[in-house]
Length: 188
Image (cartoon, rainbow, N blue to C red):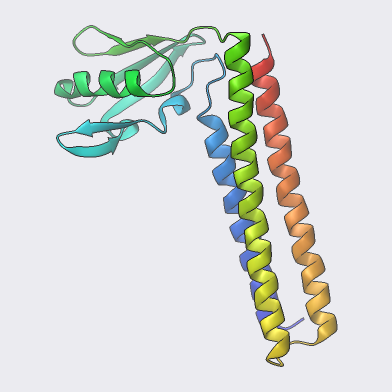
């Protein structure tokens, strides 16, 4: 295969790996009934007029399986952090003692578990679509390369088969992540 085809395959592999990692990161932000600092990754706080990620304003730690503490670097940001947590989709009630915000992670109801599984399926589908879009983009470049005389028809078909394998592997990885996270949420 030519260098440009190898480059396209390597680029596709990297981009698909990033799509899988992004999906994995999104899965981590979905609540499972266990305390985890990753639950707060999507929360942004209105900090002096600027939307700032919570993890940049405070240290977040899981003190045990059912509670999380948020220790702000600036004690004046506590009301804004509490407001952001209450407005989020986490369903948590923050309590502060003037310097630390504590939150208990309640057990998930059966109905809430099913809603979270639907959210997970949506996140997984977004990941699959991203991987398929990368495949479509690379296949388009391969066809352009063949038409321009940069690669032969056989090379192009072999490269497309390689791209399909990368796609199948990436989607399989997303499905495995989904399955594991779904089990984690549905386990009582």
